[in-house]
Image 1: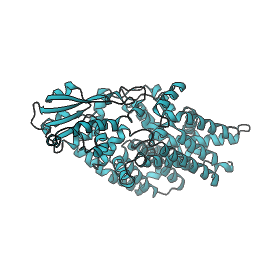
Image 2 (image 1 turned 45 degrees about the vertical axis):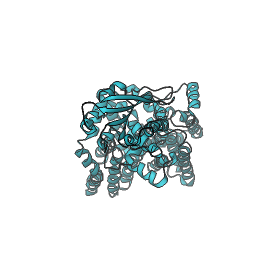
Image 3 (image 1 turned 90 degrees about the vertical axis):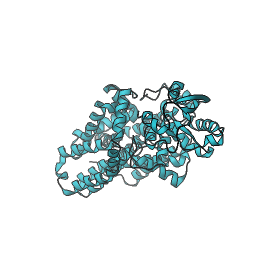
Length: 516
């Protein structure tokens, strides 16, 4: 084995840290170009109402939102700082995993570069969500298992349990990866699991996750009801196996396909990576679960598993080049091609260009973001369109609200029909003197109507026929819509009075539940 494959030294560290720093700076430099994403506004609203759970996600993202605002303020740079840092950390972790698997300078740098250039991680780290943290959790668990295999130090199970428990507080899909990883280890090196620290690690994970589990049980596991509703209503686009594979290729970068295929092949059959076969089996287990289940409509659910394949693939490629004369040109050529084409793809998945420049750019390249949901948009893809129109909507609502007589204004609630509208009112509204929104969508329904009786409502995002079922007097008072926003965010604002068939909104509240 060449000395190039057994370390890396200062040059590798410099390259890897430079790539990690470039990723962080890229996300921070572009953080303010577009507005907040619809999910971000919801997470920010949840951060103002901290709890151990929410209808559609565990508590860590809301805590992330609360802590970002408490520490750094309300700017886009502040809210998106943690996702940017998570992206840089993932680059470092991919390189560290390559080093632990035996990779040298080239493998470590290539692993870091391939994560940096992957469109899916560029998208994940451009906004506040659980998706920027999840790959760190999955790869943190994989890294600990690799160290455990190499050293036999069973104390690492305690750290594994802590990382897994925190991961469950971020997104429940970490349970699928951990189950697949442990199953792979059981079939390849089960003696590492035959000790009390393995069970202590499991206990730590359970204790860390327990508050969220209790919250879900107390609220009758609302996420399961939500998922059933989504499947029944057909909100998400179902994918064939071929489409699922195609999206994985796009998400990770088409030129990186040979790299992660080499990584999977190496983990499963290569002699010098044989000890770490559990990683390859874990990937196959996750792939089978997401590709064959209802998770297939969300192909990005598998994305957190790929850094370990990119790391191992970089090692396989590094050693292949070393054993063959005349192929050294691949060392500069492949990373250069990955970097150049990755830079060309980057504006299609993260805010780098103005909307007009983005539309011209994608038209010339003939590339569009794939649709994952059956929601009507405009020329802008959903992932970008859902970042437009929120401040303008709130300004319009504020004009309506502040034009009411003071005595009516005090008893008028703002009812939002999706969590983006509610989150926007909660985030931008205070500067206009608006109260927090109420609504029936997801956790807004759990928060209830508060002090309001429902005698006077400003309703957002509904049709006249819908509100006329609940009110005698329905007045169209304004129009909302941004040229780049999703079509569902183009609507009439209604002022509604004189409830029909109910005395207080608390009586009607059960029928306003919208979990889809």
